[in-house]
Length: 168
Image (cartoon, rainbow, N blue to C red; front, side):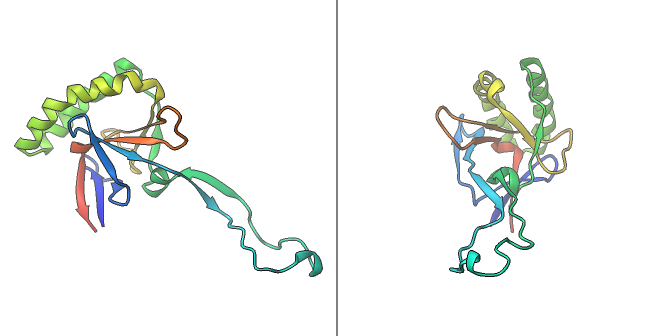
């Protein structure tokens, strides 16, 4: 199994259990999330509770919670939204922090493609939910989530160069 960690913080952000598609010249990875239900599971064992004593469920916690699989699996933490000015400031800081951690080939590809990726992201700012890894570091790689038109499940966007592949 491969786990993808935030190159800046080491937080786990994704794994190969969630297939991705490269977009924006490989600068961004697009991953489809799914809503899942956590909690009680109704199991029918064929008994007739009305014919048995007690009739009520005893000691059963029927609380359920709907969560997005990627957010739950990697314990992603939602962040406040960004306006255009704040987002541009984040991108500039992110480029400054990430570039020295990349090899020369990746630096060139990242520098070449980040402007196009930023132009792709800017019009969607109002539609995004922003997430970081479990550690909630100030210098974390952002993960973006939004709903494509007509979709019931969220789509996540990751900066490909901000992820480090680790074999488990």
